[in-house]
Length: 327
Image (cartoon, rainbow, N blue to C red):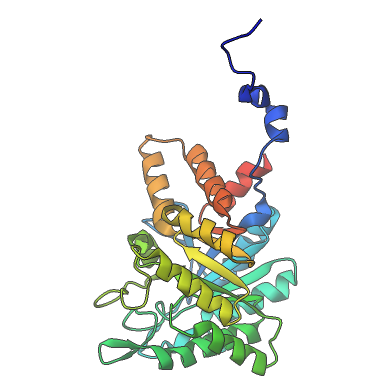
């Protein structure tokens, strides 16, 4: 006897939790997470970031405690961001041997050995008086002099013991110059994870509060990718690959899932995504108002980024997501 009902019933694969787990297509583990860590020079106690609930700036003395908590959650990697006491036109605090990030790297390496992957941001915006990501010549960012400084930053971090440097300044040629500098100084094993397709985005605003790096004039449209130009973003990724990058990054993540997917489809290289401060703040703000369930929205966003093709995700939800996964 024929039936008007379909023979194929996909609900058969959803009937209980064990069945759903068996056929789950996108898998997520704590090994996919990278946790940002903010460390501030001469800070006396932990300081909350107002626009990013539960995110803190740490004094150097408390960095080990934070890293231990991250490690205990099963998160394999951290990304360090430094906030210096002094800023100048050359961003000197970013590359001096006793800079705040360099001290943090050395301290973490000494205490944790190889048990944590140490990544560090390579940029100048926190360290320059202008708040821009490169060196000024007049009122313009000078690409080539900025490259020399970024290479000095990467080298100083390598000397301190970093595993991966993560240039985010969006200067043309930054990967090539950093790779050449690291190799010529014997740091061939230090990797580069470039913020390859870093878009000019309003989703960064809370980070600028956290890292005290808002530009003092103008904006970053001349060096960050317009969000209207996906082909240009892909050319940036291709340029970094040609220059010897080890991991590429799409940033922000949630509004750029198409670029994550395209990068994964077209290039045989590890792909990272940065779920940035604005993405975090939107969820936290709506959750505090009781409009959404924070854990449910967080996990859905994280899985969507992974589903798009990200091999790893830098996220301010790293610790909370790890707690969710560890249950």
